Image (cartoon, rainbow, N blue to C red):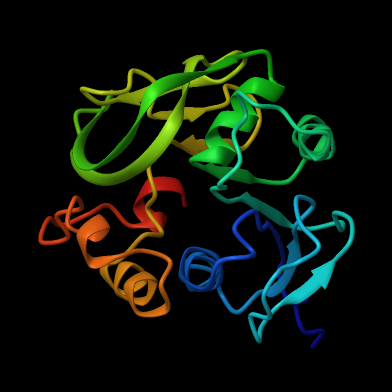
Amino acid sequence: MQLRDKMKLLVVDLLAERKAFGKEGVREIISHFDNPDVYLWSPHTDERIDYGFGKVVDNPIDADFVVITGSRRNVSQWEDWMNDVADLIRKVEVPLIGICFGHQIIAASLGGKVIRAETQSQMVSPVYYQDGREINALFTHQDHVIDAGEMEVIAKSEHCTIVACKHPTRNIRTVQYHPEATAEVIAKAIEVGDMTKKEAEVFDMSNQLISLKDALL
């Protein structure tokens, strides 16, 4: 009997310079897949930290599934490397999911529009899905999608009108919030200095938050 090849999971890893939200966030993301071969592409930096897992690649590989993570950069302040990510989004034929920055750059690459708000949104807030679900999710962003382009809007919140999207014909789903930001990831962020205790206090982690599996998979 021929054994099935492992899934090739390409993570467009845009927080690769951060120990918690990068390394631990990606670890949380890949935990929802069945032991994939993980490839890490970080076109925004040459100074990524060593995760101890995954294979770092200089260009996108021919993957079975693609994830675009959050980032400290901004779609509203476009940088040259984002053209390569946009090109991947337009051409990829396998399932694709985007989180926060990923949500924004997918919308922008498919005809939508992203603007920058005056202040940053950092909170745990209810999200209202069109199918009637009401869930709690963690937000930290300043850019907002105001036009989803080819994507269909499937959820909103009180502070953000376009919170989750799906493509009508392609296997693409996106969320503005951070389903990978579990209590464990937040605790690690405090431990390694990615976030202070005071900064973390704005997130009420006593709420039951939607998981990445329920949000995107």
